[in-house]
Length: 219
Image (cartoon, one colour):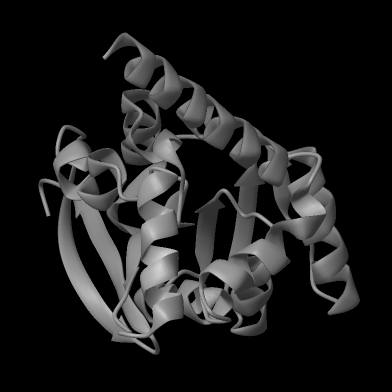
């Protein structure tokens, strides 16, 4: 049992290291990795959040390489992106610049948002890591969201295909902890915040995505 526990601990440490590298020094590979593990649908799944955003001002937590930032700006929203990774910041900046769009990117932690209270009518996060259920993040979300505002979290996905590739990818999600209860059942984790969330599984090509929408409990 001790050897099994040690092996499990080492495996999870390697997985965490991989994700740190993916969001940091290896950020330039992010799009290729995301495309591979979603059978080419990752960007389309991320854009499923757009109909839920009214704006015009939208804060995106973990903007990554900037696909949603670009799409929001092209739809006449005013997105502000926040990410701790300088590598992701550079990727997003280049993508926005290529499209001739304004760059409103901030490097900071979601646990300490550098914005005044009630700044945003909309907040969005797509496929966030465990930072989204950090109590500090949840308090900050409630603080900067307007009283009538909405938070939208694209929390998870599942492939529904029966082919070998879909089954292989689902196995990969499990062994890398992407089916961990803290992520696959985020509604329970988010319920401790000052916000109230509702869950909705949305059917998309090749699978389903879990969208959580929430606001202040007084709504």
